[in-house]
Length: 103
Length: 196
Length: 115
Image (cartoon, rainbow over all chains, first blue to last red):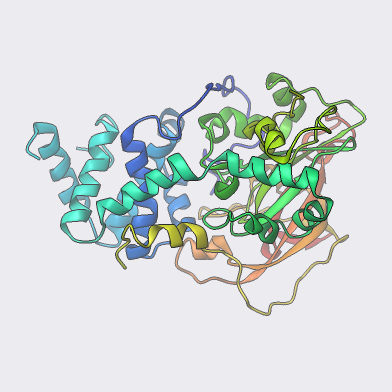
């Protein structure tokens, strides 16, 4: 699809920001998100192609404003809902509980 | 609430998924711990540096590496996820290779680990294909006009590792001393290896 | 399957290659001149926009791989050859590009026609 992910040759995206001694994961949640990739692929049986396409379907502004592992998160949320493993409803309910400090 | 509540702390969104999947018996959180530990501590650019140093000191290995990268890299014990089909690109006086994935973030995990944020970022992916010399200059790399800059856009499932040029004046160094000189950036093609 | 910590090292070391042991005839050979198709699917593709309609030369036939454009949508593996294709910087970016500079991309049979 002709999405925002297809970036080759675009102008105006700003400087390339580099970080000295960059950690592998900047926050613990990034590591958990990374781990969810392999852990969900083995039971849900989706392909990396399907995961990439979920990321490509993100809104353009959202794609540029959010970090790499947030892209993955959107893809997991979509694929797991589509396959019926974790519906959007139960996940959003859990998020609301976590925000209230229930768990 | 939106389907993907981006105003929510991503840590909470991840915890929601992880806790639900754990309760359903679909994932084992200890497997996530093991994956994090593997990519934080066991897999990373020091692996690639050992491949490069061996190629510099062992001409037969260098030949194997350039003709079948996957097999030669596996000789040193590095293989697997996102390195299943490897191609090694040799930088010479004639050609300077540089690697990008314009469509996502493809990167050779077994030899380089997980990619840095700049490699996955929109500016690098957008610019390095159309203005590689400009991007290389920002990384402090100046390629002579007489050298071809060859950009590799990782659009399929091949993964690329650059074999940088061995710096002058390193004849007396051991393989492990040479490996210590090799940087991650030099194996992406946005750096050169400096003499000590 | 439940991924347990005991399985993780083996999974990481083995990976999952997209290469397929299928006998599919290649449509191109090294040295062939190709024109990249002007495809604009609203679905998944690994053909970047900046290559569409451009002329390149097949450098290497990497063998047979899963075709991501169908696989992403559950429409089958559609095994086909994937090639390293060379483009000049000037073909892609115009006369201001440095004369010697080139780009390689990995492209499938279904993305190309003979030129």
